[in-house]
Amino acid sequence: MLNLLFSSEQRSMENPDTPLSDLDADSFLGSGIGFSEQSAMQLSAVYSCIAVLGRSLGQLPLHVLRKDAGGKVQRATDHPLYYLLHDEPNQFQTSYDWRETAMVHVNGWGDSFSHVNRNRKGEVISLDFLGPREAYLEKSTTGRYIYRVNNDDLTTHAVQMSDMLHFKAIGSGAKMGTSPIRQCREAFALGLESQNYGNRFFAGGGRPTAVVGVKGALTKESWDRVKAAWKKAQAALKKDDNNTLLLPTELEYKALTIAPEDAQFLETRKFSRSEVAGIYNVPAHMINDLDKATFSNISEQAIQFVRHTMIPWVVKFEQEMNRKLFTDAERRAGYYVKFNLNGLLRGTAKERAEFYNIATRGGWMNRNEVRDLEEMNQVDGLSEFILSADLQPKDDGKGAKDESKK
Image (tube, rainbow, N blue to C red; front, side):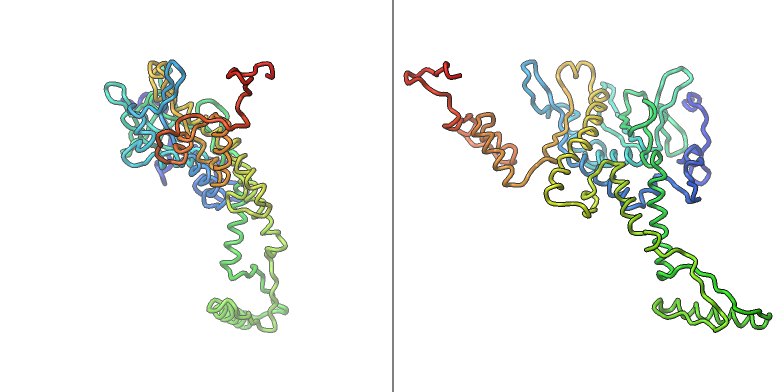
């Protein structure tokens, strides 16, 4: 009966999981090559960028927090969601795997889906991950929007919007995301074409394709001799690519393919790699492109990556989880989820030591808080705030503070 709620959709006979709408003219570029999200992932720059984004989000600590009426924030380790988000959202994935894969799907296919599975009490018991083509938001015959989920037996079932975590890439509408790969398909196709060209060129032993011409007129008998000589020369060449191709005097060899250096092959590959990094807003050095990298600008680019690339993604994920995972009562009670970005901004031992020294001397962090950040046990007597002598308020000599100098 659930199938009647949805509009009919034709699917590919080669792969029933793929709607025919995904095999439209946009999947084939002017060059004639087949193009899809999966094929674009074969481009090293695309794979590297998506992997960097996935790993960066996956490694961030994710906690369920609660802010009480007094404004004090504590980890809500007793909340059922804490274990799911921090450790194991479902039986197949750790929290890291779940978030990493979600980012891969969003940046590759435009959408990531996780079914919020609840028990009869309404408590979340698992976050069941779905493939990017296993769910789709549709309008039912009743006028409500619900997610249609494809089952393994080619049937479908409906999921309410409130029970589906849906992380979206930038799209043309509010309902579904748009794959960055399809959005910028021409840029990705250039990279694929240059990669395929290099593969074909070197698969042929680094030799350009050519036309073998005949200098004079040939009879049938002489033509047969020419073909036999050519086949013999080719057979010898296949045994050892370093052999020189020997031709009879009546044959002339003319190369047709433009040499890689003439086609600016390496420059095109570098430009494509840089362009893909720009699309995903990933610093070039993070995908191993170190042409213009220096020690000074890499440090600054790392900060920019957190500020302008990861923080927007973190906010997107936090807001979707906060509105779908908690009830109204829980939100009013102060429950929310929060990523800890300190993992990406963590400096060297020297930089951390300088920061902690300033913080403790300035009196706005105590030494046990420093130990917490360094994953060290607290020690009695180090929870008091101290203030260095040069920062102490002045005294008038009678035990009272001199307020006139303020």
